[in-house]
Length: 255
Image (cartoon, rainbow, N blue to C red):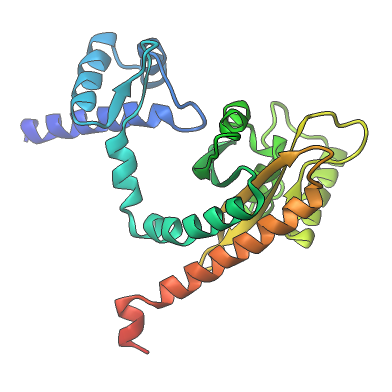
C-alpha cells in the first residue's frame, strides 16, 4: 500500500509542476516552480529532469522551463481538440490566403488569452511576438470569450468593479453578442498601429470556448470589416464542428 501511495504522490507532484505552466505563464524558473508548488528545490530539479527525459518539459536557453512537445502532441490527439483543429485549420488557411493578414484560433487560460493555432506568414511573426498573452478584457478575442463565457458579471480586474462599472461592463458584452464579433476601438484617440477583431466558434452544444481572430493595420484595415471576416470564418468552423459531431459511429448507428 505504501508503494502505491508513494507512486500516487509522485504523480500528483508531477501534475503540480505541469500546472505551473498554465494561466498565461509559458515559462518558469526553478524558483518560480518551488514558490507555486511549495516543493523543495531538490524535488523540483529531480522531477524536471524526469519530465524532460520524457518530453513533457523542455529547458529553454535562458535556464527556464516550458511545456514540451510531447504534451502538445498528446493534447492534439484528444477527440474534441482533434475535431476542432481539423475543422479550423483549413478555414484559417483560407482566411489568411485571401487577406494575407495574421489569423489564429484562440482560447482562454485563466484570465489570459492563449493562441491554439495560428497562420504566421513571413510578415506576421513580429505581430505574434508583440501580442503575447494579453488579459482577456484587453483584447477583442478575450472580449468574445467573456461575452459568451457564461459569467458576464465577472471581469478580469485588479480590483472589484463599482456598480456603475458593472453596468457598463455588461452593456459592453451585450453589444459584442448582438454584433456577433468584437473589434479594436476606433477613433482618433486610439493610436495603436495594430487592430484586431474576433468572433466566437460555437461547439455542437452552442458553448463557446474558442474564437477566430484576425489582425490588421490601423488606417488600412477597418476593424469592423475584420470582424465580419472573422465572423464568417468562425461560422464555417462552427458548421464543421456540428457536421463532424454528427458524423460519428454512434450517430450513424442511430441515423
